[in-house]
Length: 412
Image 1 (cartoon, one colour):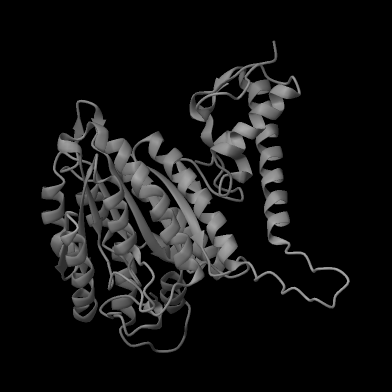
Image 2 (cartoon, one colour; image 1 turned 30 degrees about the horizontal axis):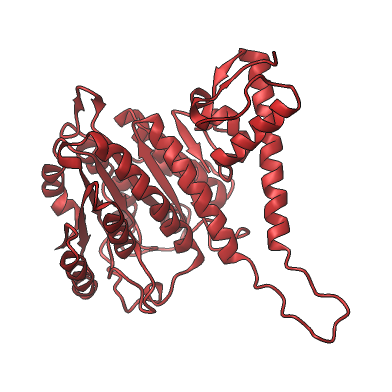
């Protein structure tokens, strides 16, 4: 979470901030998207890879029969044409990883017939390995009741990654987070959603509000974004913005806020780019009702960001046998400098909390501890910061133990 919405990263409600068409267009495996993985997909898939196993391990420990249901509402063909993992095959590997102690039941929905046929092959191979998985054809909205019935009384993780606009706002808040996901004796039944909120769709559809040219199906296209956002409020945000970048940020944050307010959830918003200097392709928005979800997602996001930076980094220069000196690969040095900045930021935030609040437990101040490092740093950097402060005699906490439960005290 981040306490200041006007700051660099986002806000607390709790909000943490770290395809291109609406309506009827289908994308299938003939699309260049499925030829090979792009940088934006590296970040998205690494978040899934890092998050699913810890989530299932944790919430499945108290679930009936250790069951957890996973929904991928826009599954695609399951793998890329070059053989690398797409989201379904990644999650099926996670299901295999936890199969000895948890039951992850995977439901994959795909509306493109061609992609559905390829997806079916991936799912059948997983079934042959004993993984509980199924592929369903059509729109995810038409399968929500079935999935929610399967997940009645057990944890649910939904991954909603459309090429354009996703499910209607009312289905998200009224069904996935709705009355079929009530509180049980231990609190809310774990329900978490990771969705793609398309920046490209916002830019393209929002442009219809200001263009003077006649556009076919203009009203229907605008209405499609109304449906996804839960009203027309986004139109005012777009028109009031100074440029597309501001409009995308205001509307993405506004969407997350409205979902949180309607569902008693917290959110973390991650801007996903193909390169650091590019505009976001989309925002990944993570919703959870539990503080543990924020911590788990923060760890997954930090590790995924590291993987993404490595993917985007230029290859190391080739060795030149005739050169007097080798040209150094700067990536590792840049990473080290980045982590040093995070640790220094966290140290300053901890000292500020000690000065203003007195002794505190790290878990209770996730956002304030991480500050501007929230989209990159994780527990290992917090632990390093605490240990350095202890060695500098600025806290009585030695940094030993689980980071979340560390109690930060003044020096003794």
